[in-house]
Image (cartoon, rainbow, N blue to C red; front, side, top):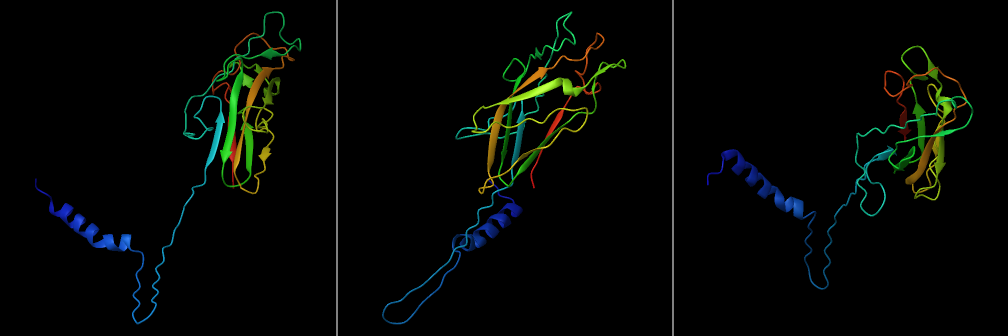
Length: 212
């Protein structure tokens, strides 16, 4: 089998540098009696900054082998008030969500200090025909999942929500999650139609986690 000149050169260079890679330092001591020689090695462990946010379907973040990978799935929560009950103030449960019945997994994992969580909508839920329903009609209730403290949920609005701040402990490590149950307050009357559902009709909320 022929080996190219470039490959031979690369192998030769690697062989020449191998002793430097293996032997960090050498010292020779000569004389009589007890001799002492020392050598030193410097070690570095580089831990990258990492911020993980999950709302709904996502990768595994708990256990001994969490994946902490990006998942592109966007869940849809649907509310369907029954005819004759629209605007009567009786809350309506949702359907959909990775935990079903309008319930989503929400989680933050980070390793470099406090985290700020916000939610942003581009406007009120629209039917594309000039009618709208404010995001204040959609409620979020946080319940304990696996962490000691349930991850609080931002209060949705027709724009930027309030900020939820997770203060990091001395270790700077945060792992906090919750079951977020979305509900429809059903306290406003609106014409028949489908509100939200698409990005164009302001049907998508963007959750953002920020870490220094």
